[in-house]
Image (cartoon, rainbow over the protein chains, first blue to last red):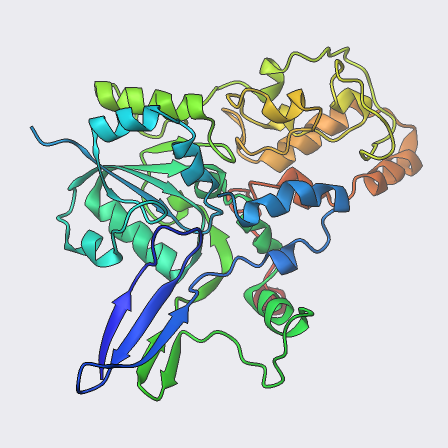
Length: 63
Length: 324
């Protein structure tokens, strides 16, 4: 099956790509949105002092 | 004459470095007049294949922000390095690991467990985790491999210049544009900021005072005119490069080190330990033990932006524990 990749998705904050599969007639058979990046704020914020979190979590998204 | 070509990229980052470039406001037009931007995912619609199709050395200046956290970011770093005459580590994450490098206190498996199993919004009874290759009905899907260890840019490719900061301040960005436009680039390896420490630029009064305890923000109201460290509040200024405009300290917030270590300092956290030890006044082991207790999360504070660049680089991995 033919695959069209949109990689990376642009003009947004964050990382993403789209894979589109085409069937024999060139019609879209299926499409997948993938997020290729994870930094792990959920884990590495653990153990940090609570008063420091307002200085850490703004770096989830700076746009 | 063809214009020089500039590329901007983000790896493990928040986009704040890209916004800092836009914070040059109308000066962004000067940058656009000066050079053609050939790759900038946040703002322009170029894809990876466009970069792959370029000739080696065809990009004159690449401003690379973000740490290297997975195999895609490593591949793009190598690709942009090959295509670029001048590679710049732009911002704290590319220079030192930044906030994403706090992930070096944990492991990929621990992050996956927390995010995909334990998080309250996850319903994942089958314990499905991201795979580098997934077979679906229509074919195959691939994802980059997430690394255990977050790396700085220079740990992956050669880098000509370093612009620190979370994010880099606009005056430094404009200075770099001027240097680039005039062809007067500094010697390779230069860190484009001050060579002195933040304390050298800080206008607060220092009285060479000793401290006998460490305070957290809710314990005291700090005097806005006196050195925060001499008031017992952990401030990373003595171990941090200046050039930021003392932005946090002017807002009565202690420095957290986003400009990295100053000239001549290899390990930012070790330098800060030394600075704190030199002003601490206590009587014997009991006092010292108490003060150590008063510093909550020393590693995550002293290496807030610099864990990947530190001598330790990361917490020991389980496989290293077994080997030891």
